[in-house]
Image (cartoon, rainbow, N blue to C red):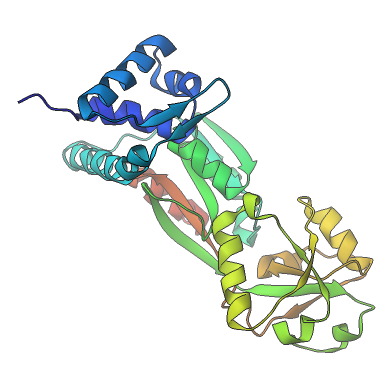
Length: 294
C-alpha cells in the first residue's frame, strides 16, 4: 500500500509549518528550497489536499494543514521519545540558551556563570527575547533550551516549571493608594494601568483578562513600554499603575512603590525550562543549575 504520510514527510511539513517560510524551513533542514517545495507538493498530492496557502508575500496553513499539525507534532515527538529511550543522552558542546525578558527571578543572576563554570559546555550563547519568540526559535532548533514565562503556548515541547511569581502592584509613591499595605483590583478600578500588547505574549494576555473578567475589572489601559526602566519611569511620574511579577520588587527606583495584590496569585506568572522532548538529559541538567546545584 502506498503510504501518504511518513516521518520524512511530517518532518518537512513541520519545518514549513513552524517557520511559515520555505526559505527558513530549507535552512533549518539543511537543504535547498526547490527540493523542499517539490516534496511538499508531492505530499499534498498524496494526501489529495493542499496543506499550505502560498503567495508572493506569505505562507499560511490551510484548514487541512491546521488539522494535521497537532498530529504531526505528536507523532514526531513519540518517535523522538522512542529513539531517546534506547540511546544514551548526548549533550550539546555549545549551549544556546534563551532567557525571557518578561520576568527576572533572583536565580537568573549568576545562572550563566554557574553553567560556564561547570565546564560541560565549550560555549554558552544567551538570547534574551519574549517567550513566544523563544518558543519559535526552540521549535526551529535555533535554541537548545529556553527559560520562558508561563502561560505560553508550548505544544510539542517539554517544559519543567521552576518558579512561580505572584503579581504585585507598582505605583507612584505619591499616589494616595501607596499608603495602603495591600491593594485589590477593585482599588484600581478608576486608575490607568500599563498593559502589554497581546501580540507580545498572547497566552498570558488572555490569562490576565480572564482573571480581570472574573473580578469585573475593566481597566483603562496605557500601552506598556517594553523596556522595564522606561515602564518604571512612567509609574514614578504617575502616568499609570503596573502589574509586575514579584521579583521586580528588587528593581528599586525613586518614586516607585510596590504593594501586594489580593488577586496576585491568580495572576501569577511561572518560569518554565523548555526544550525539545528528546532533550530530557539537558532539561534535568539545566534545572540543577537553576536551583544552584551542580
